[in-house]
Length: 122
Image (cartoon, rainbow, N blue to C red; front, side):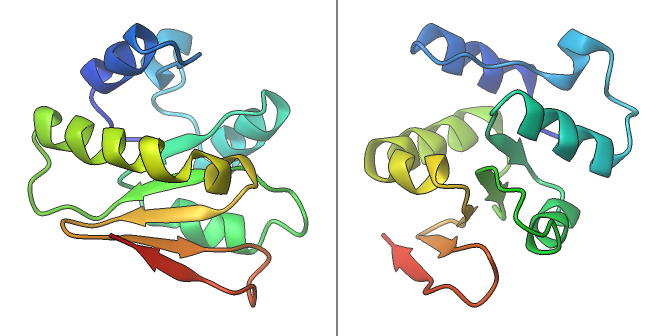
């Protein structure tokens, strides 16, 4: 959600099975439906939309990894740089179905279900 198609292209070029909502004609699909589709396809969501963190927290056992970008600089090269660093250090965290908040200088991990032990990565 809100992630430039060039980020998806970069992910594909680096061997990831990535899809953009536009690829599937889903850019106007409700968030809950996108979340359900990501679960059914075992995908990790990349988004600027804060609603997905809340949806994940209330999902009652349905878990997928979510990368939630909270960046002041939202230009694509910067987003790719922050995502690249995250993937180098924390791909296992995402595969476990946690929310990782990507900020300018750090990553915050929100383990689900809510109440798990969270942490920060630099």
